[in-house]
Image 1 (cartoon, each protein chain N blue to C red):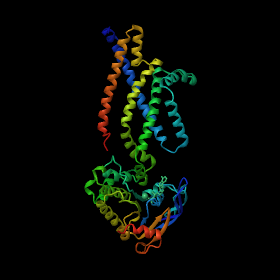
Image 2: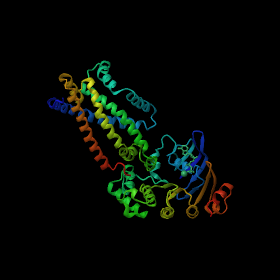
Image 3: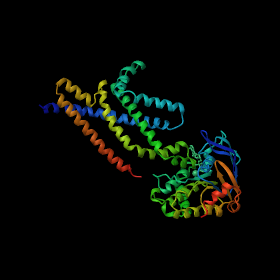
Image 4: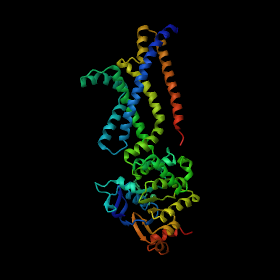
Length: 219
Length: 241
Ligand SMILES: Nc1ncnc2c1ncn2[C@@H]1O[C@H](COP(=O)(O)OP(=O)(O)O)[C@@H](O)[C@H]1O
Ligand SMILES: [Mg+2]
């Protein structure tokens, strides 16, 4: 039957893993946002070569499973580059380039959804392209992309769980370790699932408040 | 002040402007008339390079604006544009809309830019709307803000692309009155419009376009009372009810 003692034992371990989960997810989403902003913007411009490189990056990330990317970054890249990677660093890199590729799509779509008239009005007043982008296009695009960004954040948190394959001691890894040694499989994975539910639910509420504050969905 | 020579614009195989030759004088009000699809907007947008001409030359104050060393931003500072759909910046207040370009392009101080914005708003009859959001205004008011925004750059010339075509009929008059006032003050203007009475009354010159070419280039009296071509006659007939 359900062993509450098992739950009590695994709980602090998963809680500890949660710190790493949050740390990696937040770092990943911030770095990914920067990557996505730059690559997404470039993909809306006429820079042929840069555009091809960015599209290649998005294609590469979207066409391979994240678990393969994690294995590749942790086990193969250090061999190619001949420098050892820390697990957590490999984890952050993996999550960042993944989030970056998807955010790139979000940014591109949001930029393209800003009416062309905004560009024309800005340029016709003598603003530079960069000024139009930073003062007119991004503020509007950001409002449009907030729901999709929030969604990506949730996906990113869940994605961190696959880092267990390279031994990053996040929530899933902690639960798995305990389950394997104690054979309390039911308790370990039930507690783990509850942790994710709790984490994502809180995030959903926060994102909802943020969207409301930003006036998303209103004109 | 602006001269167009052998201007041609193609979209892929589709020739939208075909060998346009024109020159615009300072302080002139030129109205461009013609059926939709004639290439009027494209011509206007070539003048400030929102659209890149396929062939030909455009000279602004004697300088070739398509030349490598020409800084297009300088022309855009001096030649304003007003659009059919206003294109106000929706997240900014009316005053911020007007202050943006003076602040960023002319590096005007905040206080000075604000005073200028208020003066321009007074000029278009919207002195009380400085802190309103654009979406809370009627179409006619939005278009007058757009005119104030262009005026804040102290332009030498303003291009208008069907400034009243998106407005409810009862709001057209306010916008035309503002434009009439600018004409009286000696502003150089090129106006694409379907407001025949306005053109008749305010224009120094009327250009009639169809199918990417200039069909007539005449004084308003001449054009409206005795158009030379059949195209112009049948076009005008549609506006006389
Ligand atoms: N960006 C574009 N791409 C392709 N065709 C265009 C584009 N803009 C305008 N056109 C075409 O050019 C022609 C002239 O358009 P336009 O200058 O807007 O005419 P007008 O303002 O006189 O109604 C139209 O046939 C239109 O379909
Ligand atoms: Mg047009």
